[in-house]
Structures are given as structure tokens and as C-alpha cells.
Image 1 (tube, rainbow, N blue to C red):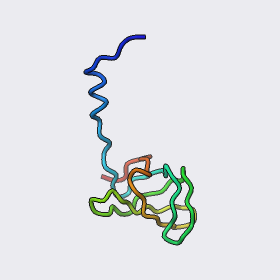
Image 2 (image 1 turned 45 degrees about the vertical axis):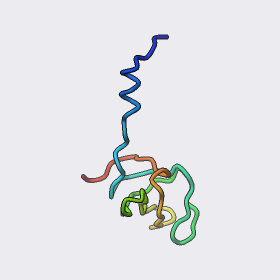
Image 3 (image 1 turned 90 degrees about the horizontal axis):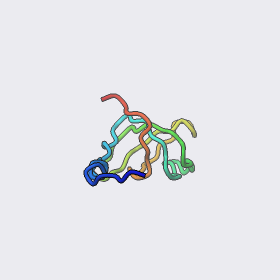
Length: 85
């Protein structure tokens, strides 16, 4: 097995994911509770409808339950598709 160069490893170590934005499609990495008290399981896809300040919080709308909204920490979201930019 070939050794990885330090320069190669350094390149990937410094890759910072792009911040999430309005209209990005995301998947939940952990279950969350909607604003109405419904549990939305990990793996559910939704769309970011609002970014809350600098706190790494996002309001996400889900199709199921219909029109459910939840405030989710950025660490619990996985980007599926970037929205309109």
C-alpha cells in the first residue's frame, strides 16, 4: 500500500464544508422534534426555509408530516442538494 504524502493529507484536512443556506435540500442526521411536537426521524429529507443568525441553526420544512417545521442545529443536517444561489 502506497504511503500518503503529508501535503496530500493536509489538503483534505483543511477542506471546510460550505455553509448551509436557504432553499438547500438536507437530510436529518438525527431525529428532531417539529415545532408542533411531532418526531421527525433521522434520514428524513427537508428544505431549509430560514437561517437563524450566526448560531448554526436552521428552520427546515418537511413534507411528512405535511408542512412540518423544525429548528435544527447545523451538525444534525447533511446537504443533499444546494438550492438557488
